[in-house]
Image 1 (tube, rainbow, N blue to C red):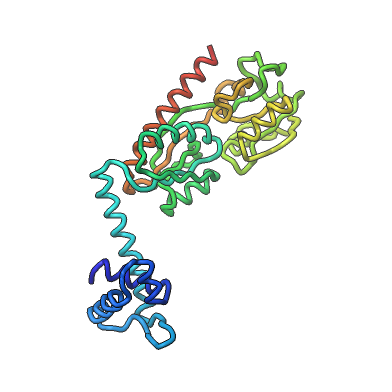
Image 2: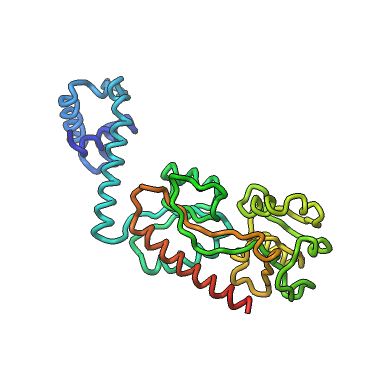
Length: 302
């Protein structure tokens, strides 16, 4: 049994047409028929029921199809691993992130696409729980999100930075000159807060509890950058991490109650899973961008 024969078998099984398979594979129909007959001889059973008008998979063919797909997938993984070792970075890197990290991801992407031209990037923005689910299903190679409350044994985490939930507002807001604010001090001003399904919303709700009931909440939204947009346009206070307002002109981020709302931005990988070289490179670029973020935040505090 050869890998080539399995690929021919899968292509015919998916299209149920020898002519269509030959067109997609750029080989003659006779070559495909010959290779599949050799495969059937080796397996000792017929994989396709051929008639003059159509072909269908036999019971053996139906049983073999998912197994053949798995063998081909494993072979592709093996090839990718060896290629990565030889060429440092090729293929596709699938990244998942919460929207809080959009600006940080974008900054790292600019560097990555410039320095690693052989790798295609795909980026999916989801909630933290959705990202961990995708990570476990091998749908993404890494997840960029705040550290979850629970430590998972199958996840390895690399911290990028620590931050606080802040009151983000325009620099002409009455509270903009404060070094920190309390929830009670925000009661006289309109606020916009993160939605309950987001990491920041869950973190805020857990620590603030019923105190949020006294706030004049004008909007509750899961998109942190939209919260900053609303705060800037309507002169409201957005309760969000400063990473969401990073490099936003005319806005200031004031910590809520000095340390009570600490969060850690992280990169999460599946433990004991092969890690692409391109993923290691992207992680290093994320850490560089996070260091710039920490440096700029320290400058703003001085």
